[in-house]
Amino acid sequence: MAVRLGLSLPQMRQYAIGRDVPDVARAAEETGYQSLWVFERVLFPEPATQGLYGIPGLPWPDQYRSVADPLVTLALAAGATRRARLGTSVLVAPLHVPFQLARQLASLDAASGGRVVAGLGTGWSLDEYAAAAVAPFERRGKVLDELIDVCRAVWGPDPVTYEGELTTIAPSEVGPKPKGPLPILLPANSPRALRRLVDRADGWMPVGTGAERLAKQWKRLRELAAERGREEPVQSVLRVNTEHTGAPYEGPDRRPFQGSVAQIVEDLAAHAAVGVAEVLIDLQGRARDAEELKDLAAEVYTTARAAGV
Image (cartoon, rainbow, N blue to C red; front, top):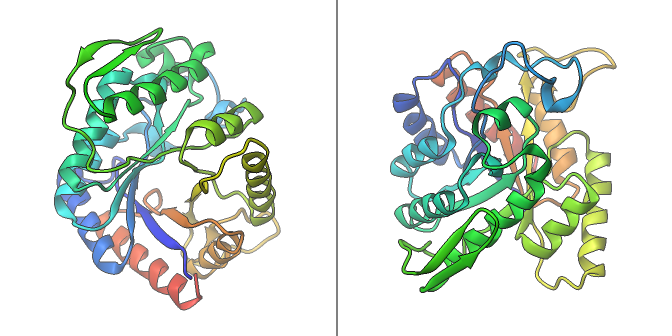
């Protein structure tokens, strides 16, 4: 069975958000993409306190200078589509008030007919934390834990009640409720995060950085799930950040998903063979505008399906 394919929506500064998001969302769904995704960046520090992903000296990509709000973007896509799942990959949990985010996700799920997938993470940017976080960077894991708890409470039956470090909910009716079970997915890049995923989340959201590495991570996650007595399967959505160069990329330094459409699809096939259920493809960074993004997305989808992905 072919994996599900998803597409990241246009959020960067070369796009006219109000026009291009619904346009690309409709075109992607018509092409055959089964899910639409957003990511979160809230600012572009100059100079940055730290490098990209916290790696010293690694510059932030220029595309991060302007990134549209993820939930506004998903709401635009929800109104323009009927079938595609609507996912976040990922929301930086500590940048949100837990109760408010739980309600926003529930409202979006109710409005879209039960299509939302909540990908949550802790982030890495100290500058973003300084500007927007509800707790210090050192408490990011605890904030994520509380956010998951609050979401489960708010999405569950009334009366809702909760007592935590950041959130107190007196017995209350809280609506609207999600249409159905609203899955929570986590990236999980450390042993502690993997345990949180197995014990508390519905699925895993790794980043595609090589099929061999992905296979090892996936094997370890399944083993950990068995060790901890998890009976339900772990959902899986692989994120691939592409660097489409048009022509084939030559040389031994080529990174996964860098180069021509054929090279990107070759990497897709290798990663899909590991056994993940869904792959979301981010093509927006190198596209000049929405028309180019739609054409590229259609070419990648058609080529991937022809290759058996």
